[in-house]
Image (cartoon, rainbow over all chains, first blue to last red; front, top):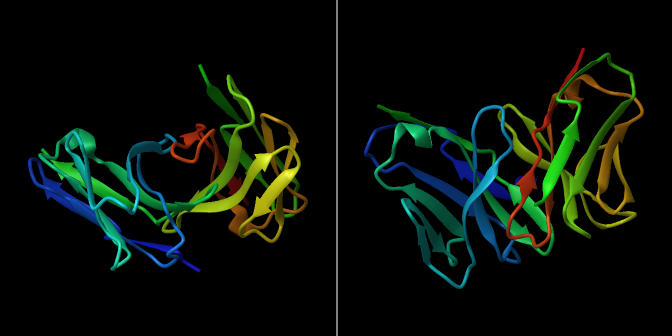
Length: 110
Length: 111
């Protein structure tokens, strides 16, 4: 059972463009939604996170948009750079259980 | 500062052999501990998590097990490995669920 659905599976964007990664969840009990960034050969690292009482959160060039009624949330990367090329995972959490999506491989062209 | 140690970095095992992967955390007390598996096209799959010594929640695996013999030690085991057990295994810890800290992972190849 896939509790967090993430799309697209891969994404190629020109430098300066705005890649958008989307996630949808099923369990309305989830109350915390983080995004993680993973570089090859490394473990994922927390990038940004949001709670369902907020519709948007910005940290630097990274923005999460959250639609509680649609049970969807998305990551936007402003002014994307080649260094942003990585795999991005959305996740959803309730209590101590943290479920991840399948990931999006993002490549930013120079 | 807190650190997480996970070993070995790579492992090649024959089908039917046992498995033991160990993860230890330093610099914190009573962390939540997690085992995830990363396989191509399947993202990060939660296998087990633990909120305290001897407390293990199992999410998916049939032939894998986990144990937490000490506060900051988490062990992933199997009595007989299957081909489908191949993947990148990641241990992680958190004090609050707001931030997971991942280890460097173990690349397991079952042949």
